[in-house]
Image (cartoon, rainbow, N blue to C red; front, top):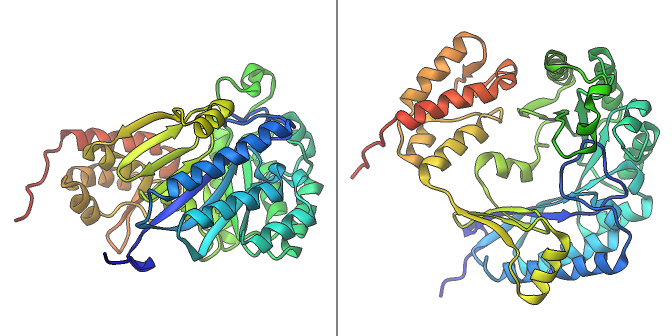
Length: 397
């Protein structure tokens, strides 16, 4: 039997969901729990390591080039637990030597000891949840830190040796104006990150924020749009490239892991509520920590949803996800992969180009402009209607 070299293997991303937090933010609808129950934490660690070992045996033809620890708050889980999980990944999968290995952190849950430990274990990227520079607003949305702690955390991260730092921000927060958002950007830029994510606040049903949103003086949609465009302009002026709707980076500092989601790469998710797209199938783990632990350790059911996506639906996802990125879509690639004509889609994009919402690049790619990103749902809806009406191309003999 021929042995695959790493260059012959399919790239694979791994997502590890750490569903533990010190406290629940008012706007958060991700699956997470506030607990200090050591038995539950230890049970989760045993279960996820067993799950990783089991899955690794099913992926001999893959080489892992990204590992992402998200949450929840991975840094709250502790360095020893995160290091144990990463060791399980390395023992069970072929992890490339230059893999991007990220962990999310909150400013209040990092320490020099934790950071040094994780850096020595091979973690090389940190995603720090700063969100805002206004302490009053941070308190309103339930963040467990202030901006001074964020500044101190960045210094600690640098001292520990990390050279790839992403800062997460949210705009459209209670009482926030365009001017105060611009000041937030200026203050965050002083921290000199390699990557910045800017997300517009969405008040999701079931969150604490949803219950009393009418009393919070939330910016309206027009104000959020102004904040978004201000971020694009300010960050561009400081050398950041917008490579995805909400993500900006200095040269060569894109999130390699998140790019898998936007470009159709394969990934495996571990932990409750984690999603996967692997070997042509999409599936999701149960959204229940104890159910996940019991299922893994006793051989029970842990997959909550399993789908095999039809080619035409994959083609629609290609449009939706690629048009989130700065690179956009390539007509020849679309037609080759999905055997569907791009011409009907190009007619739609030409109309949006005339209104300044789309652009055709010199390399033949179609992408949305920053103004187009603001109405991307409408643009993609029109594209999907055009796609649904199109007949498949004839296969070439």
